[in-house]
Image (cartoon, rainbow, N blue to C red):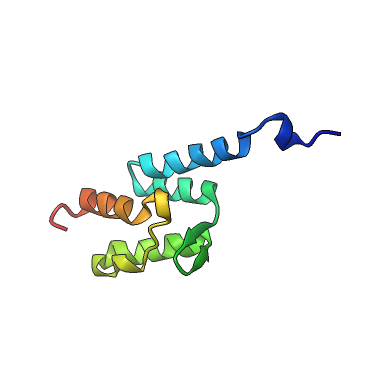
Length: 94
């Protein structure tokens, strides 16, 4: 019997890429958080980061932008850059 992945090669990677695009294209923190939750755990430099842990660090950075470096970039997800962009929408002087 064939495995599902053999029948539909690339389906899982395409789905993950669509979820990654949602993170990169988010225009508000609400959209961003929904996309992070939908994506699932993110690979950081010190290991895997669960969505709610990542969101908690992002929330800390929103209150104190100097703490932004504690937020993983998540490789190609460029999470830290997206947080900077969204903070700039809230606090244009940052």
